[in-house]
Length: 436
Image 1 (cartoon, helix red, strand yellow):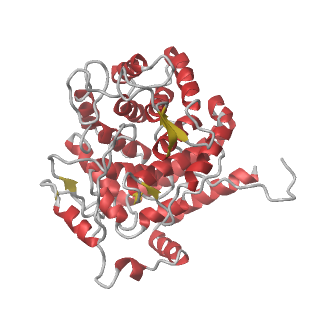
Image 2 (cartoon, helix red, strand yellow; image 1 turned 90 degrees about the vertical axis):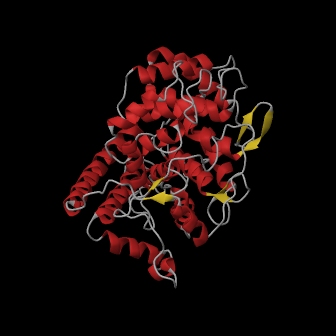
Image 3 (cartoon, rainbow, N blue to C red; image 1 turned 135 degrees about the vertical axis):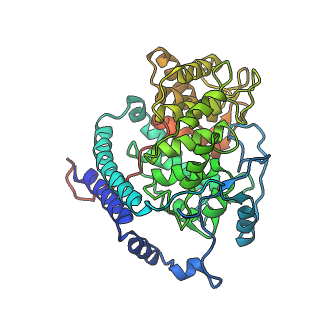
């Protein structure tokens, strides 16, 4: 129908303009329309530091903590951040240029080839999106009303600056990206959820610059969100988060552990960037004997958790891996499932919405017939964790509305796994227009 073709055509044209030789002029025009000029972005002191294609940086190995722990942690701590260029400078000091130089002699040819590949992929993606609307999962169709109710509640939590609050109570890039994932997933089944103001928040100031340099995992998470919203993860406010992921993948572990590594592989797969064999080998080497992965890469028996394992399953499937790496992991997930159908963070604990949602996404991605009944039980359990308000609670013993649980529950409720389909606007039928 025209209501479907118009937004898809707009996405395709946007891709042509963004990645064509006139992409810079197009981006400046968009910024001008939004009321943000190039001079305003640069400021009086000149252009801000940026991770561009010719300045690829990587974090030094060493003890550090992620932007925030997986949302299913019962008592997450707050990681306070400073604001402004002072923070950006501190983050830049924690990076060093890799010893191996990168040959840029073929850059012009490489970029042209990538542009062609992306435009071709965009065209194919539009066809796939049309087919996906015709053959949406039954579970996603049945849950449309629940997703819509959850999205309405989640959008009510959005801050005036367009962001979503983190553990500190203030807008946080990581929490905002989780909300963007939820909105994109909702759009995939026809629920209206505009990501523009949330993306604008990520564009503001030096948020993208600082967040991308927190760890390679943060850069990967940002790149994955940009790809899902139709933005270029190689050039977002002059920041190139995907380059950090590419460098990390070439070194082995992307980020601080398997949880980050999974986001890294997903970001590469979502952007049609080849996943190095070293990245797959690193995933294999960090898998515990019971088939699980631990958040920080600990190999001790019993250290694994369902969240990291579920993310790794989705990443490996997205990278085309279908070996025992995946089947052992899904077997671990099923062995961790509670009698109520939900999943705990670790076996033996109480079921929680976050862990249940991620496990559902992993089982959807793996698509294994022998686990179909367990998947259905998990979907039923997750639906039972939605409060009357539309929000989800974290667990039965903590029944209050929870923004993190809600954001992570929505993609599973919509029946989609990572990497998410590219967001498309949902157009309402104009009044007076005959149906059909």
